[in-house]
Image 1 (cartoon, rainbow, N blue to C red):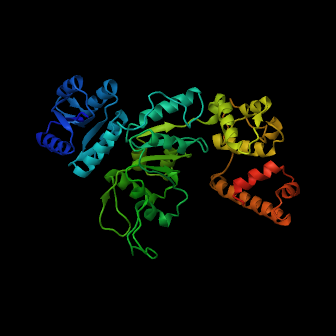
Image 2: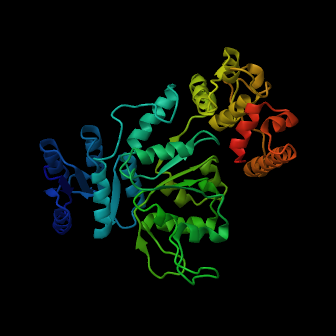
Image 3: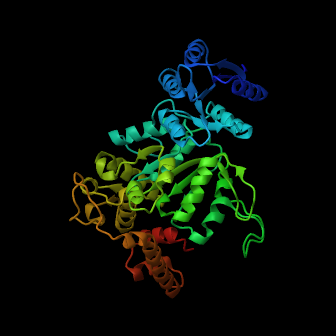
Length: 449
């Protein structure tokens, strides 16, 4: 196997020598350039597995080199070397296509982590063509989304995934992770709105034994759990301001300090974030820090709502129905049922489609789901209109709790009917006014044995 090669571009001899020695000890063969012109000559004459470039050069900038590499040698990961605290410069580099960045003075441990991450890209399972995968649909918005995911998977830049509730933001984040260099390491999703404020710092960063009442042993946090992999901050807009400050420091320093510890330690994690709220509006309202917003929103990726791709509804519906057909009896859609779905504007997106079809499947008698099995409000706008749910913020925040409450009521009623019929499922289904198949589906969904 041939030795891997790296190109180092910096006009400071001491920095070049430090990088050459460090990469040489990692068994990389190195070439060096002191300006943009010399860098172009090396790039045009040899193949490189990695490039490291300083920002300020005598005859140009590192951004010029990043753009040149992106245009001509896009398979070569390139990282920017910036002055300490130059967040704007680092952000510019990432937006231009840099794999990652490192600050001066160069931390050698951080440098080795960066190099290893870049070289892992050679082993990443990045598709050579844009396949459908778990992100179903052949509409133009979905093809564009899959193409963007493939490109972003080769970067370490923070990505802010915007989109409405139920549109599949976590699924998109998982695909960015799985197609990138971190695929063999953990993907850790966090719902920022589900963690009590008083426990948040400990959950994120961990704590030391004795740091507070009940801390009976050292506990690693979610950053540690995601080491080498990806941390997905879902509903990031729900972070309290006090936690936003601590998260910003962790992102800037690429280091965390557990509660009760006096020492910071480096942590290699890629950050992806999402929320159904408009984060720019949250910044304007003073509920979200502007500096953290710019740190998370280096690259924004928008997940299209289902109403903007109605041609995908049939493909999605067939896939959901295939997943529901687990009892050996093949249930299919009547054409009128599909037409009814295609004429509906899904304010809850794919998640709402799944819920509608789960109900339709339990109601259907025979081998077909008919249009009357699909319980949707016909007063909803058509798929060509933009529907916005008329709910208050308080109502939106309690939807998940309402679902759990309704499931609990349903579980109690079904259990009561089973107990009254001595667990005779046929008799219990008749007492509840359900078909046997419908009852069996509900038992499975609610985890009743």
